[in-house]
Image (tube, rainbow, N blue to C red; front, side):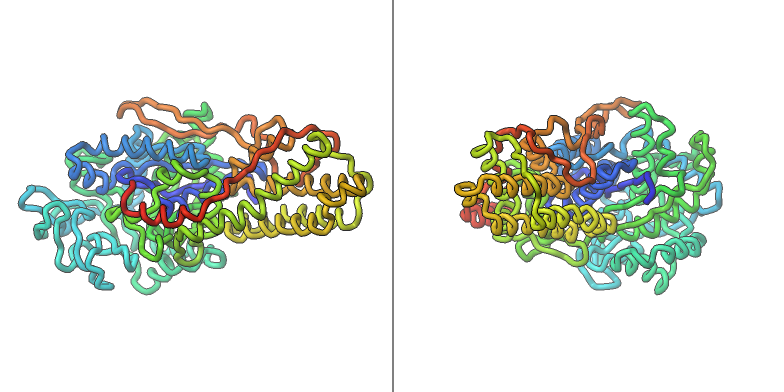
Length: 596
């Protein structure tokens, strides 16, 4: 595989806190994949940021009698704090409200215009007579003309997932005052997706063998049944990126057009803040680089159709406008492993109804790795899944704690008790010992294969299966009993188990980074498995903006089996996980709808 891996994660709207469905939909899978790729020694850039210009932000500002800037900055700060607490290791988490993003987005608009992939056309748009302004699409709701869902947005239906033509919405109503808007004519620029369709189809067919079925259904499937046509990329707005033409005053770039550009602009920003201004070319101009886009299924058309269309349409003209030293096409998405949705206790998660497990609130009572574990074993990779508090309780106690946490703790504690915390000399290993170590070492291939294919549930299941094999080995060798009659045999079994645990620590580290680092320390290592995360404020002409950064310096982890030696002094161990009381099930269910 290529050495350069771009991990691009969907940009959350800065208008609401992040819930567990958001985490398992994109942020966590992207982080697991990025951590694995770093362990493999590959050149990883993991980027995202707050989507600062969407109409959800202006709706929130209107509702709270504040400004879009205040709303965006408040939620953006909470995102940075959450991702640090949860260990989402962004090389750069930024926002779309930066001078750099404005420049990149405007240059892409100009590149598409110059290359003939934009056209101007009048359209009917919803207008509020009461407010004397055109309404952004998400300010208008009504009945979907395709599936009949009566709370569809005028640009997209959340039930059927189709992109909608706003003028066809049935029984439209304003979200602000519930009044009925009227259609008025206004002129906008359109992305000529019809002209780009042959190239977009070729792009999708090249990836048809490994793209997930949900991605192919909402991209190639829709194109083949309906075809593509022009889609407006400007709107009458006062909060967003101005259209870079003197004739277009009062118009901004449509958020769906400019938000996906954030993957490119964030990589360019990262290169600048790390004093490597040309490094972004490694992921965007080197055609051997591979870009993975981690998103939820509601974002599939934007990433599988529109963003590839933008990249194809701009060609190398973007480089000329941006002042880049390279003149070459930009790298298209390699894979788009879009997840389905996570529900909650049998109902759809709803922020407006406060029916959600809010990630920040969860971490005020529980540790991050149990959350990461449950969201991975329950990840909606191929179908919708359900967060269930009883299931969380059982998975924590019966799997994470019983299979893995107790294994590590009892072996290290036993070593501390009988060998003063020094790894014993095993003497000559038996076939049973060698077979166990060989099986665990094979996990670097079997778990790695699942991770390469972005089968994260399968990868974690394989690692936990291997942990169960170590428990079976200890049941067979019974060092806790044998120590009384054959200290050498007990030493051999404990040494073998410690070697296996040391390897499992690496196999599980992309999923469980906090406890893996603690275990790394208990095993006597003085190094860090990972780099460090930190928040930093940047300053540009638009004002200060907070970023989350990842510094890989000092990271000592690698995707290789243990080479643990006898004679090493261990640190005194502590339990890796807390056993949960069954009372949390009803306590947490009672909290639903109350805490945000």
